[in-house]
Length: 93
Image 1 (cartoon, helix red, strand yellow):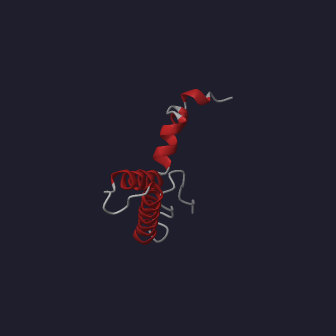
Image 2 (tube, rainbow, N blue to C red):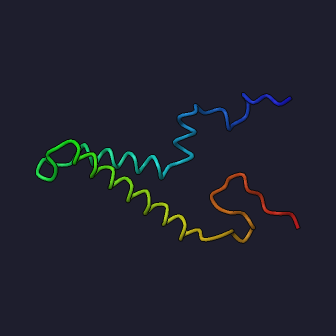
Image 3 (cartoon, rainbow, N blue to C red):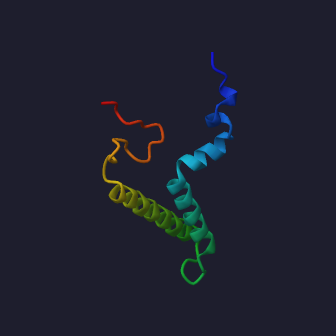
């Protein structure tokens, strides 16, 4: 039986693996929270308004980043692998 503790996949803590697996999601969440916290009072005076604006900024940023990824990498690469799947291996002929 294989020892999983020596595997590089399990060498990092779960939270770090989660952050590295979904960089667009977590960067969008961070930007949305920063927007809500740093919004000036002249734009939004109530906390609910700030939260909604921060939510919208984060959601729009996530959609833009997802669309960018879809259009930059529209299909399989010449080797037959679909990016960004790290476990993908080209089909053998």
